[in-house]
Structures are given as C-alpha cells and as structure tokens.
Image (cartoon, rainbow, N blue to C red; front, side, top):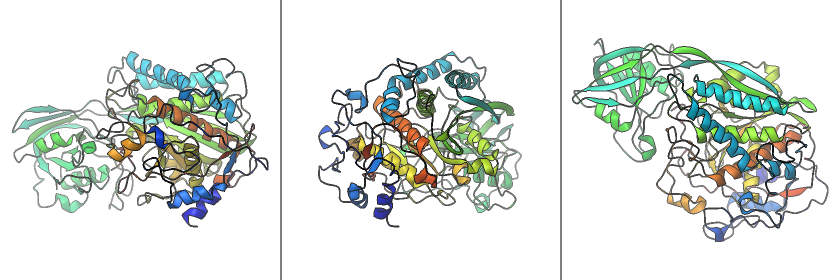
Length: 607
C-alpha cells in the first residue's frame, strides 16, 4: 500500500461516531508558541516556513482529507486560555475541584483535568526527592539503586493506590556500580570524569594506554569502527600485565568493543566519545552488554571480566598520546533490588490491555527532571485523572526501573510475561523526555517514512496506527512535528521484540538544533535539544512548559482513545469515546529536518 492510501486508510480507523460529526472549529495555535505566529498550520495544511500550500505525499494524504478521523475531540472554546491550546480552563491541580470525583471519560473532561499545573506538581516532588536524597553513594539523584529512586517509587505508587488502582511493585535485579576512577599518569597528570559501563568487570589497573583505530575525522558523516572487529586489535603487543585499550564510540555496540579488547588481552577498556560533532563530545557512559551478532562464543548479552569505563572525546584524545599511561579503578558491583511500578485499571475487555510507560530513574549525575521525570509525571497525571473512568479496554501504566542502565526494568518485565500475557497487550506507548527545553516535537517513525528501521529492528504491525494518532493530534492543534528513528533505544525495545505494537513521543536529547528547526519550533539553533541531558542541571528549570503541556495533553488523549478502541491497531472492536463527536484531521506530515540523521534520538543505550 503506498503512503497516500495507507494514510487515507489510517484516517478511517475510528468510524463509530454518528453519521454527521461536528467539524472542528478554527483554532488559534499561535498563543504561547515560540515559532513564527503568522505561519501557523492547522487544517488548511499551510507550510509554516513559506506560507504556501503543502504538496508533498503526506500533504496529499491529509487532503484526501475529507477522510477525517471521527473522534470526540473538543472544539476551540471562545474563551480558551492562551496556554491551554483551546482546551477547557484548568479546574485545579491534581485532585482539584471536580476532577477526582467524576469519571473523566470524555476528551472534554479528561483534557480539562490533565493540566500543566498538575504535571508540574509531580515534577516538583521529583525535584524535592532528589534534593532531599542523602544516598551515601549518589546523593541528589533518583538513580537506580539509590534512596532517591526508592522514594520516587513510593511517591508514584502511593498516589496510584489512593486513586484506586491495583498497584504492583515488580522487583527488578540491578547491577549497582560505585564511582570509578580514571587518572592519566603520563605524559601529564590529570583526573578525568568517568563512569562505569553496564556489564563492566572490576579491578584496579595501572599501565600503558593503547589507542585502537581512532578516527579523528569530524563532521556528521565521519564514521568510526574502532574496536568493532577482532582485527582492530591485531598487530599490537597485548602481552603486558596492565594494558588499557582505548576505543572510540562508533558504528558497533559498546559490548562488542569491550569483548574484543578482553579477547585480545587488554586488562581494562576506556570508551571515548567519538568527537566528530558537538553532541558526541561529552562523557559517554552506557550499556556494554549488547554485542553485534554473530560473535563466536558471545551469541547474546555479555558481561566482562575487566573494567570498562567512559571518557569524553577531549579526555580520550589526551589519553591517546603515544607515551600515555593511566590508572583505572572500578570497585566490585553490588546486586540490588529495585522495582517497576505497575498500575492497572480493569476494563470490560480484560484480554485487551492498553499500556503506557516511562522510566522513573535518573542518571547518577542529577535529578533527571526532563529525563525522565517529564514522561513519568505526564503518565502519572493521566492515570490519576482516569482513575474513575470505566474503560472498554484494561489500562496498564508502568514506571520502569534502571532504564539508564540499559532498559533493565522493561526488559525484565516483558521477559517475565507468559506468551498468553504478551498476547493480551494490544499496544504499548513509551514516553521518554517529553519536555526538552530546546524542543522539537517528534514521533517514533513506525511507518519508516523518514528513517528505515535499523538492521535487526522489526516494527510490529499496528504500530503505524499509533503514529498516525499522534500526528493527527499535532496537526489538529497546529503543532509541526518530525519523525524520530524507530530504533528500540528506549523502553519500548522489549515490547517490539515481543511483537507488541508500539509508539511514542520524544522532544530531543543531545542532538544540536539547526537553524531550520529553530525557525519552525523556536528555541536556539546551535544548542542541544536538552543542554542538560545527563547532567546535574537537569532540574525543574530544565523544561519547556509549552512542549510539556502539549505532550501531556496528547498522552492523555491517546490513552483515552485506545481505552475505548484499539481496532486500528490490532483489529479488536471497541466503542467510540463518550461525549461530543468531532473530526480529527489526517496527519500533515513530518517537517523532514533530520535528513540523514536518526531524528535527534541521541540516547546512549547502545551504539
């Protein structure tokens, strides 16, 4: 099916509305928006940058447009507040007047109650939890294995229990790493910021640093294959007692590099960032358990018997000096138990489960308010405001543990499900970083209209319908959007590996915003989408309220839509969402600002 027909068909996925649905009124989408106000794009399909009509493939699909999705979506109220994007005025923060004591089973009611103020209340609590954490190893954070994470679990689970959800604390075994040491000894002495890769071994190593196939080319097209093949380690004497391999981030998994280094005879591994672009300069610490298959003797996830630590590109170049020696020390890791928070609201159809999830942990560097307090708070507020609905389908919300260690909590959860339990899950929606301060609105590209799925990633059937719903919503409220690669580099990975239709939203991490993107979405060109990504400054100040509000509304909208019908995703018949019927337009199409890139994904969990 070509793109036009696919989009047109997708636009018909909810046809249970009355025969004459009320059309959507004109919406003032410029209020509160930081981009050009005179080129707003609503149902008229006007290009924001030129003011001319859109003529691309997806614009044709939208104009087939007449094929509008029949959904109970509220029209713009004449007195709508500028920050509310046309939704009814706020009636209070979480537990505000009327919201907790009624069934918010219509779009009008739910989007009246899921507010920026309510989401921010949860984020302020996450900030307080981090601020008050006196964890003996990583104070001031909400990282997996710390007091801050445990307090975050208690906060989320307590609110959900009080709201009437069936809450399960799902135990997850994690590897807890202590702070590491990376010190250059010669030709000059220096102490470098570092961290321990997941899957690292322990030990103290003092010896020569051997650089492995480092590529000094710069620019976005520069490629590094450092340490990706056993041959990269040949021709070097690794017979010393304390040889330290220095490898560079690049095209293969970190686990592959560490595996080959240990096989060659290295006693420690330093992984430096690639340094070819500004977003690949900072300290890199990630998961080193994944390998590029097939590796003889290492067919799957691996752990290493030697220390594996990270370095920035600048520190890595200093360590690459011909006479360089260094000291690496990684203390033995501990096994600790954290918990996923799983909250379920029964529906009439217990065998058709709609899931939404967000990781609850931060990195060890800071409180993690955007990454990923934003996603966690948005689904929490949605869950609380839906607690008294009587959905057609069973709803399940999840807050994942140890995502920053390599998607541990979500992977453990899906692995623990029987096939019958997996088959009951109609779809999964993932929300990781939905309020970036220099944002771009992005949708996981399940239809591969911009990015072919990476090798080894199979997109489950039905995922396109989730993408279409997100895009139609952005189109309706006049927000331009773009695609981000459907890569599996967040907590939806385990679900797509299990064949469960998935989708999600993202507003950007360490990728640099271009001039073109700044002209469309506002913000600052030349800066990262999130300048505080994986840093101590990812605090309550590190958010864009407009992005967070739009996405919180969309998260609630999507959850309510699929609460009543997943027919567009898995063919299971449902019902129309109660309330006034309105038309939702077909998607306008992505802006296409990520040509040749991964859609600003920028997460470091793998390569």
